[in-house]
Amino acid sequence: RMTPYGCLSTGDKTGLIEVVMHSDTIANIQLNKSNMVATAAFNKDALLNWLKSKNPGDALEQAIEEFTLSCAGYCVATYVLGIGDRHSDNIMIRETGQLFHIDFGHFLGNFKTKFGINRERVPFILTYDFVHVIQQGKTNNNEKFERFRGYCEKAYMILRRHGLLFLHLFALMKAAGLPELSCSKDIQYLK
Image (cartoon, rainbow, N blue to C red):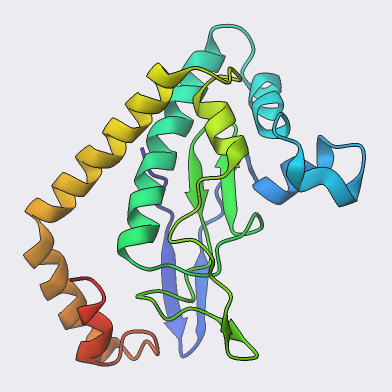
């Protein structure tokens, strides 16, 4: 249920990226659903309330399922690929509930640093408000979270089954001129 969007290179450091309609960043949703800018990121209900406003009635259940599936996919993908610079402006959600990431400038463990300090604090993003949506706003809805965990496990098993293919594809991309994928050491991150 991940949201692939088109990217087309048109020259050196230039290209086109497909616009994903009917979507917004997590940061914008948190800001628009909060009373104070300073506390916007701490409003656990903002994302769920936004989904409720876009999916009235029975549609909400499907939107939460789409969110859960896509969140599991991106948790696994961003962890395995070592994608960095993850924050609420680089994570978006469609009105249908599908979560997706943008801005993949740092990957394969090539994380940003500031004053020699690694800015990445966690291996993937699973915020409290994401879990709040997955659990449908209930604090003790372990059944829903266990389904999410099962989706993550299934995704890992699929990647493991096709691991050699991924390693070969990344090895082929070494010649593409990506600064984050320029040597065998970068590919070793995937192992």
